[in-house]
Length: 267
Image 1 (cartoon, rainbow, N blue to C red):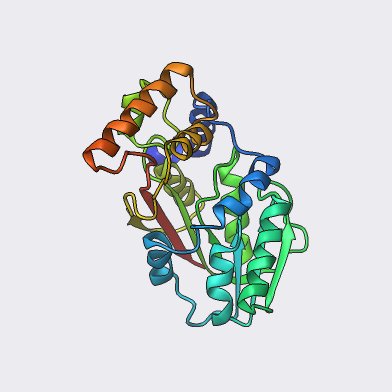
Image 2 (tube, rainbow, N blue to C red):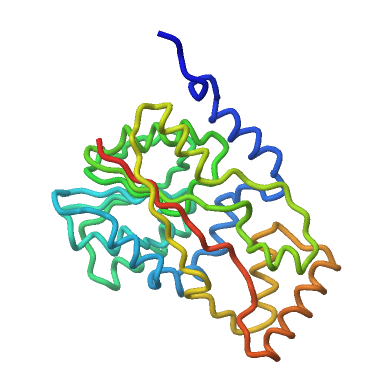
């Protein structure tokens, strides 16, 4: 039997090539996220995105969950009361410190965490009924990570990946005059999963600026700088002028590209 044209396309390689081409935004390391942990903990647990994820994730027959790249415990803590045991891992020790602080405050005791880089060996992590990887798959070898997610789940996998070409909105990129080489978006993952023989489902979560309430100009500039691994003096000046103009008009300044593809599949 002859193969189809799509089987001749190596989407994993295309992802890698596109990722390398847009390497201006490096993958943040554990030390970067350590510095961000307590700040993230302020507003990451609530909002439209999290509520929509909870609506979509089926735990009806699940006794265990795994929150991959858990950060301060956004979903491990949300779902722990609904299962017998929740597992979570992150490569940032400070994120795990915040996770357990939150668990203690909420009285969550059925939680086990691991300090693991998701691109390395997942040593000691048990197979779980449901595996969740939310907004954490900014990795170099996406095919390998998808295989790990599939292997780790007994019943279902849920992951989210960016829809679009950048983590910042097109509007603010245009305002700053920032020319970018697009990052690979969710369609690469969908095609890699197809090549793995996985029939994945896709939904979309578009919370817009939900939860985005920058209090000051400096916080706004800091957030843009974090997202882009630095701004040139000219880019920063344009962003500052734009923020002040929006403030004068009573508008929310454009910020992140908050469109996410929710990809899920059954085992």
